Amino acid sequence: MLKFNIRGENVEVTESIRDYVVKRISKLQKFFEDSVEATAHVNLKVYPNRTYKVEVTIPLPYLTLRAEETSNDMYGSIDLVTDKLERQIRKYKTKVNRKSREKGLKNLEFIPSDNDVVDEADDELKIVRTKQVSLKPMDPEEAVLQMDMLGHDFFVFQDADTDGTSIVYRRNDGRYGLIEAE
Image 1 (cartoon, one colour):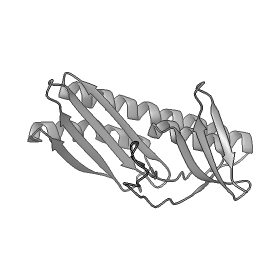
Image 2: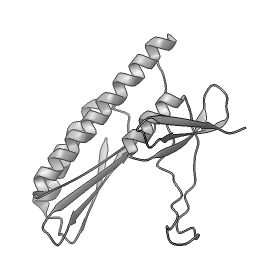
Image 3: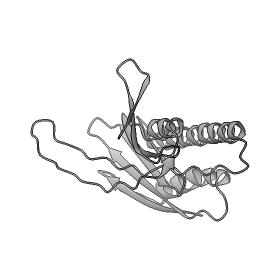
Image 4: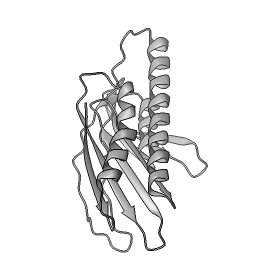
C-alpha cells in the first residue's frame, strides 16, 4: 500500500494536482506485493522560467526507486516521471529474474542499500552533509543496477560472495569499475 507525501516548492499543491499524482503513481502498485508498505515522496517545483520539475522517491525494503523529470507542463512531468519509474521496475524485475535463473534459485532476495552518500562542498574541504550507510549484501551487477536507478556515479555495498565492502562506480568512458576493500 503506497502512502503519499506530496509537497510543492513555489507551487501550491491543489487537490486536483494531488489527485493526479496519487492516481498516476498508484498504478505502480501492481508491481508490488500486497504486503509492501511504502511512502512515495513527491516534490513538485516551479522555476521562474515556468518549467515544472517533479521528483519522486519510493524507498522499498528491497529497492529504492527514484526519478525526476522537467517539462513545460506539470501534468506532463508527472506522466513522464511515472513512465520512468515503471521502466526502472521492469528493468529491475528482468535482471533479478535472470539472476535467479542463472543461480538456480527460486526466490532471489535483492536488498540494495539506501541512497546513502556523503556530499562534499566543491570549494572547501568541509563536509556539509552526513548520512548513515546500511550495507546490504548483493553482487556487483545488482549494485550497478541500483546505482543506475538512483542516478548516482558510485554505490557502496557489501559483496554477497566475499562479505567485504565494495564500491562500484561509473567511469568516464561510460563503463563501470569495481573497488574491493581489503
